[in-house]
Length: 324
Ligand SMILES: Nc1ncnc2c1ncn2[C@@H]1O[C@H](COP(=O)(O)OP(=O)(O)OP(=O)(O)O)[C@@H](O)[C@H]1O
Image 1 (cartoon, rainbow, N blue to C red):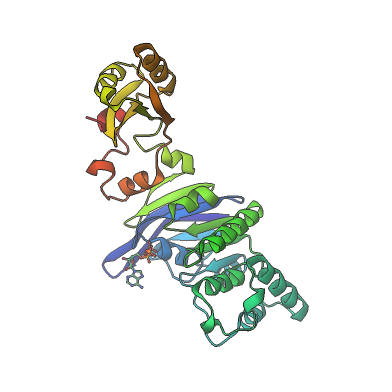
Image 2 (cartoon, helix red, strand yellow):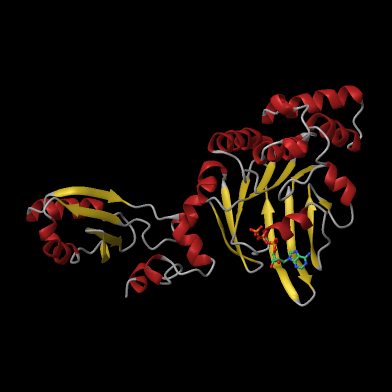
């Protein structure tokens, strides 16, 4: 439902978006991750027709946003960064105005506004000036505006920014609920949001997409994916256990962390069973044996050029190389 091809945006000599290709299908909730200034908002503004690309194109439901902007915008809902709105209007007035701008008659407007208000729970502030609302409610007004016409494609720039934990939960629930019939793209700095709501995640850095996959795919890029954390009842025997476990074929290397041994997987099956059996055999009493999935924050830091765990650069290399 969204097709992005070789999308480029230059501001003078600066390239903010540098050849992005991306497809998003119905039913997908795509998390758009990246550090500040990576080009997420610029990409979203081009996809929604609010900024013309320098080259390349974006299509929404088969319509080229550059050539058919108005028709494409009918099919999409957009929550811009910060959700700008007229401060002296009330949510009721703003939403009615937005529905009019979308060409709805009075009855359709009433139904659409009522539905959106109920979905984002705006009833209590419906007739208060937007300038007097908390950041969270302002964000929700923006979200109601974006979903007013029940669009097939939703582009949400940091939809949970400024919301308290309960509101974040509600918005994520709403996104998950709506995802079945729509293609949804959301940008976020909150990695837990990717797990909570996204079926797929892309990471953008310096205008380029540097990763694309399910949250589990991304996590698997962490060298600690598949590793096992081992803690002994008698910490004094950790050195002996380390030497013994390092001999296992399923363990490629062992790192120390807060008194625990992190046994990195050599690839293939988890080393957990072999570690357990070896510890029993040698009388190393275990207080912990935890398989590790890998961490999104580590992968994110690595992909976006920040120093990862222990200042080492490891993603993309084999586990064996990583620990050398
Ligand atoms: N109108 C503009 N003129 C000049 N430079 C711009 C303009 N809009 C964006 N930029 C620059 O383009 C780069 C990408 O900005 P963008 O807002 O897309 O990043 P982002 O990934 O959304 O960041 P954030 O997470 O902070 O919202 C930044 O360096 C920004 O300063």
